[in-house]
Image 1 (cartoon, rainbow, N blue to C red):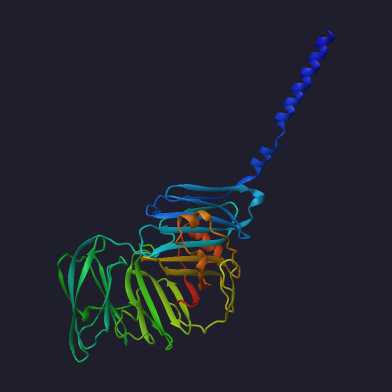
Image 2 (spheres, one colour):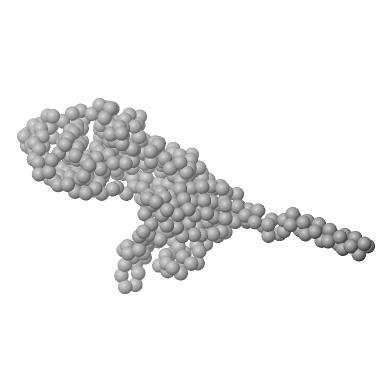
Length: 439
C-alpha cells in the first residue's frame, strides 16, 4: 500500500509539472506575439507590371534598410517585423524600371512618415497618372473655317480624349479681309464631338461645338457662328519670362483629370502670335466643369497653379523669387528651407549617362515629404545593384524641389493616393513653386 501511495504521489507531481510547462509561454511564443504586420500593400489587378520590374523598399526613421519585396499585379504584400525593431514611422520607396527601353529609366519614388499598421492599395498608373490614353482610330474628316474682318491668330481643336488635340495657325494673311483656314483631323472611337476654340491676342476668344462628326466628311464653318464664352479671365504673365497654360473642359458626367476638351493649350514652341502678357481665357458655366493649369518660367524658378471649376480664378500673380537655402543637397540627409509657407514638398535627384557601346541610362529619385521634415534615406538593397548594374544611385545629384504652397498636406496626399484612392476624383486647387537648376 505504501509503494502504491508513493507511486501515486510521484505521478501526480509529474503531471502537475507537465501541465505547468504547457500553460507557461516559452521564449519562442513570446517572440511570435511581438511580431507585427507593420505594412500591408494590395497590388490592384489593373496595375501594369507585365513589362516592368517593381520593388517596395522599407527604411526606418533612422534610414536603416528594414526589408524589401518585389511585387506583381493582383498580389498582397505583407511586411512583418518584431515590434521593437521597427520605428513608429518609416519610409516606403517604390523602385520601378521597364525592360527594353532606350534610354533605360530607373525610377524611385519615396514617401516619408508612413505609420506602423498602414495599409495601401497600389493601382493603375499611380506613378504615371499623367499619361493620356490612346483610343482606336475610326477615320478622319476636314474642316474649313472662314470669316470676315476679325481674325483669330490660331485655332485649337479637341475631341475630348485629351490625346487628339491640334493647334494650327490662321493661314490667312493679315491683309485678307475675307479669310479661311483648312485642316484635316483624325477621329477616335467614342469621341464624335469636337470643340474648336478661336484664340485671339486682343479681344474675346470664341468657341464652336461640332457634334457627331462622320468619317470622310467635309465641314464648312463660318466664324460668325462661333459663340462667346460665358465668362472671361484676364490673364497676364510677367514680361521677363514665359508661360505655358492649358484649359480643359469636362462634361458634367466626366471625372476631372480624365478625358476632356482642351479649350486652350498654349506653349511658346507650338503657338502662333499669342501674347500671354495680355490674354483673355474663356470659361463655360453649364456644359463644363473646368481644369486650368498655368506655369510661368521666370527669374530662375517656376510658379504654377492648378484651378478646378467653372468659375475662373480671381487672379494670377507670380510672386517674387523666394529665398531658398539648401543646407545639404545629398539625398542621404537632405535639408532645405524656404521663406514662404508651404504644406509639403517633392524633391528630385537624377543622373543620366551614355553607356559604352551606345544607349543611355537615367536614374531618377523622387522624395515626397512633410513640410520641414525630410527622411533619412539609407542604402538601396545590394540585390538591386547586382540585378541592375547600370542604375547609378550613387551618382545622382540634387535637381530641384517642388514646394506646395496650397495643396493637400503630406498625410492627406498619402491617404488620397494609396488609401481612399480618390485623389483624381476629388481634386483641389493647387499652387506650387519649383526651384532648382531644372525648370
